[in-house]
Length: 270
Image 1 (cartoon, rainbow, N blue to C red):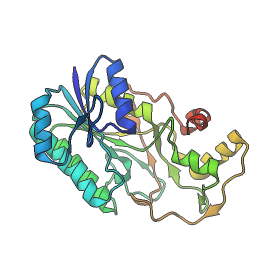
Image 2: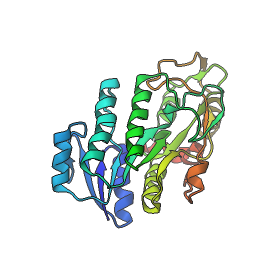
Image 3: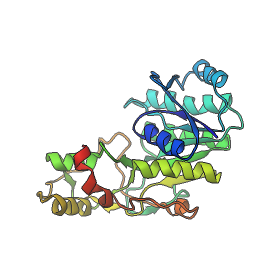
């Protein structure tokens, strides 16, 4: 089986490893290319057409990043990228990694794939537009919560450096997924032929206060101070518990059900 992997960053490299270990032939793609990586601007139809001439994939995964850009970058990479891939490779299954930030809930409720998706940021609206393109093409949308793993954990890095702040009373929930669990979820969706929308997150959302209390005990450090809500978050301020029940019902289980299961191993890699 041949995978055309759009995006070769933090998640993409893990996806390549997981699929290759499962016997897939992986062709990775990034904007600039590199050794063993094809160069392609996924938002440019001509550039994607050149991929079609070079590859005949059985599956496409779009997990490219926006390069920390704003709405224009989101539109180019996600909306135009998904549209170009769907048009250039009709009939080839397409998996697109979206984000649980499309759920705008702020009441601490449990959200499923059927919950309202009405983000208040243009970036979130563009993620949904890309999702609609993929679903219309018969593809699969994986809504990922905050990705962490070896060498990367915003929450733990802020805690260890003393930059962490508990927002108000710390009730806001943190929804996360280990990078390798996310990669294995994509393999599971691909091999099982699962279509539609799936939340990809771990099984235990932590409140900020619960998380930092556990980290303080784990690393013998003081609890971070309290402060106001961070309303300048790129994808908006939300407070919800993202359910992974639909994905788990297909047979997938995360190796790290909670961020706290992985946290003790992370500092040495940060």
